Length: 337
Image (cartoon, rainbow, N blue to C red; front, side, top):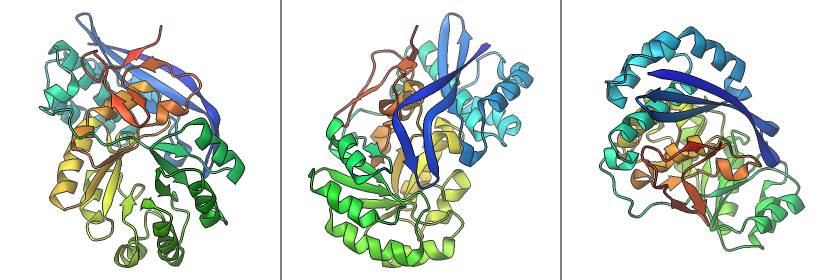
């Protein structure tokens, strides 16, 4: 098995702002694993909040090339278990390798990934489209530019309720709110009352990820469901979220890939938690991988590639919130030539 790594700078259509800052481009690394004429693809993106850089990714891949390039006889689940001790301190890289190997393995089996998992493409959730923090005028303009059935609205400003009130005048679409840890306990409970009236479906990660005491108070008093994001990074976090959140938003890069994400979904369902998979701003390589989990999800946020000026790949597409799978086996992702 041969490892090929490529780095890109993914340019955004618009500056993208959340409560932690603004970005105009996203450095990304695409992993390709080749064997016997087949290729599988995976992705990891640079993220200041999680202290990841493409330079660090490249260096670690080169250092551990021999470990990665073993003969591809293992199942994806076995390969993840094999890699974990070597990459347990860098889940973003583990994710890219897990995506790439899973893609390669299922292509060699002449299967699409959802077929390998024995899943059917029925009752799939629609993906939301994200509106980053901006002036109300600019946020409204982005919504008009992209009519959509579900919007995720980033908040964490001094005029959050005014923003949602004004945007609600433009559309009957479902609203989801993501405060990215930007609120306190009282603010969250108070906002939940007004946001419920404005047709909001749920609130994602209003508090700091370590504020479990506050999360419990919000869980008991919120007028809307609360979904964990930064509080639920890896498998061991799922059980902590029980009785503190109504659901979890899993990110493949944070948890280490498709293999652990699937286990996290099963665990969450056993605890009665709603399940969601979200994305970073990433290309169609990462987005196509996410799509195959949708048959077992309540919600999905896989608009990352839609936010880009220059998607470097093709694969699963999203049209008006609906997921359209590729005819290509594996995850369906292909690099643009």
